[in-house]
Length: 467
Image (tube, rainbow, N blue to C red; front, side, top):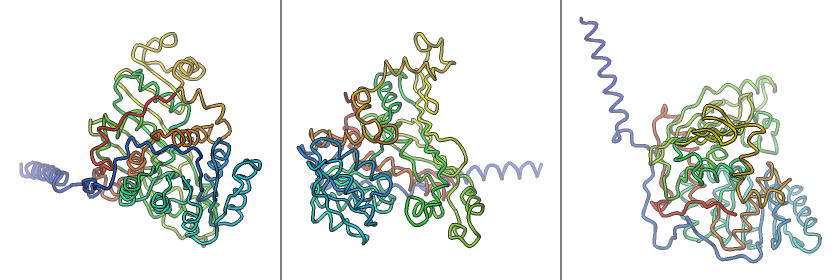
């Protein structure tokens, strides 16, 4: 009897301890920064449309990896001008400035200035050429400082993913955008992929009913980047894998499903997340296998788990699973899954199942429409934007999604339209990284999202189906 009582006592006290640990008072998420009242000098940018730019004058910072793709397609669009290219390396700056001139055929992009060498040459560029827009394609740590300075100098800022590394940087970007009344858009190109656009269209048409749950991922084995030791992505990104533990690259999977669910626009918003990482094994084993014992990669202690899984809860109680893994030997996937009350849309492979079946193809929801049978759904539900631009964007990178994105950026600027992705969405999607790091460090404790909109997401129009 004593043993039984002791067991019950331990059980009860353990449960009580857990309840105390999880109480809102004691476990209030450290990540939740107070959402201050918007100063009168700042303007909400959710549906902001900047004055029309008849000609879009652009500068590019960083032309080592992603930058050249953006530069080339931008240079081909009408009523554009490339005024400057900045990079740490002289050969890259000159190469892509010359490429812009070549595309312009002596009629456009004839006066492209180059800036290279010192770390802050981009600042000199902003002062001297005064571009309308700046495309930022550098290592992650420079995204926020460059975007903030570009806006302060009078330019709209377009930033490669992620928007920033810390919540403090994200707040600074929001405040600067609101103060300067300049766009700051994170260039989440996956939102412009064919399947993602089609699923957005299907969700807006109510094909799957009310969206309840989504799954998103960036699972892409990139250990080979460790070969890039002096230049290139691996030269700086490997250090992030070593010292940080969380979801370091959430937006490729999360951006599209967030727009399917209309998060941070009218209907619902991000509330909190919990996050867990696996042990960190793959990178260390790869370094041991590929490099000598005294190589710099073998001197690192890799702390980031090989795979991270985070669960987001929204204000309405809907859920989003977000996974990240750039280490494990497995096929590429972004999951791209959205579950609704009437059916499910999923990716990798692309497939659809609906309550009652898909007319003329399946009898019920126990069967997928996939493979060649998907063609009928493409014909019926392809997004109008894809239909209009897919041929023009062919060859622009990532199956054309890069080109569609760039076309839309320029189109919105020239016509004075709101952008497809606003500054707040870029921050919400990027915030998964620091929040997941905090949650992992505290054994999966929930972490609340700051409301970068300060409550104005409720009046932000849903992203329409652009024709």
